[in-house]
Image (cartoon, rainbow, N blue to C red; front, side, top):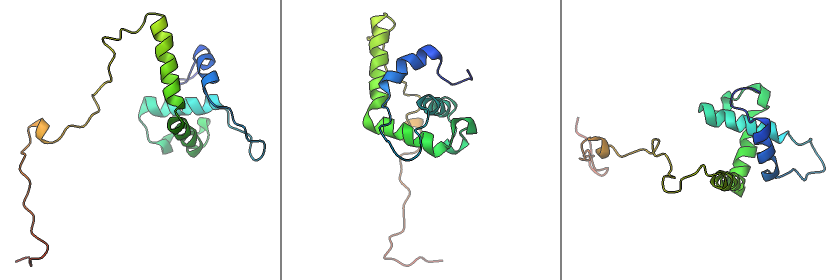
Length: 129
């Protein structure tokens, strides 16, 4: 197992939560574990999708699976299942549960910058040079 990839016990937990391909024609479906590992690599490293290593297959395919899972609520269901499992085992203190706000962008004024707006020249007046 390489870095940023799900282990066998983690995969045993995730596999039933992922939708199976129902297509009977066309290309064979991609291995979902490889798609999960590719998405985990992107999320863990913060790299752009185009920098995904070739061992995960085409970046477009991994991105497609990730966005489908996001949009259809699969990732929310996985997060909920993880919460239930961790809570059942006593690993979550709900009084302390929070979302990390370290990546939330503040306004310039919050950092002490000037709140003044720069004056712009009205578009109906000629510019004097």
